[in-house]
Length: 232
Image (cartoon, rainbow, N blue to C red; front, side, top):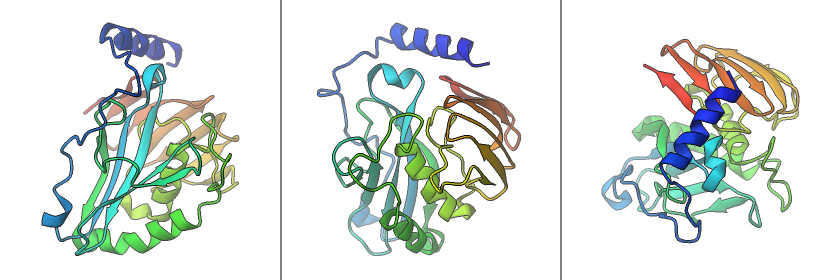
């Protein structure tokens, strides 16, 4: 359940010849957002894409994009290892993550998105791991920990980061037992190294050293390390 899917993911990575210099990798728009100036409604998006170079075999990077009603530009929030960890508008809102096309994890527009914005902004402003040196690639806090924290502040998102989002289960609030980000289940977590998640939105997930395997109940499917979700 853990080693075999990672081996398959590694083989696919090398067969696709995805080995590229991060400095020249494509970071242009993937066309997943309309032009902000032509879209007056509020917007909330959560994106995730395979991370840079060989790390994409097992891991993905997540980020958040928001826009208030009437705003003529999107704001993108990433949590990275470079300098101050919370980066604002350093990349194209729906840009490829160093060559990897992102997938939309959550989408809301109009009044629904507008109601979420105050909590999203407050969570980002008060994020406890916002100082230089706070970022840790493994087991967290990393980009996926940051996005999971924001999603927990807005449980009506009813969304879940992919199984490849290593760090999403890191206990950013210091609690090793608590509810899932969607509020539809519970998590038991030993510092991000070992854990169990059970919820209607999240399904059943087993975390072993950051790698996640499990079952999606709401939309039947398997969650596999390296390969992500396979199913309906």
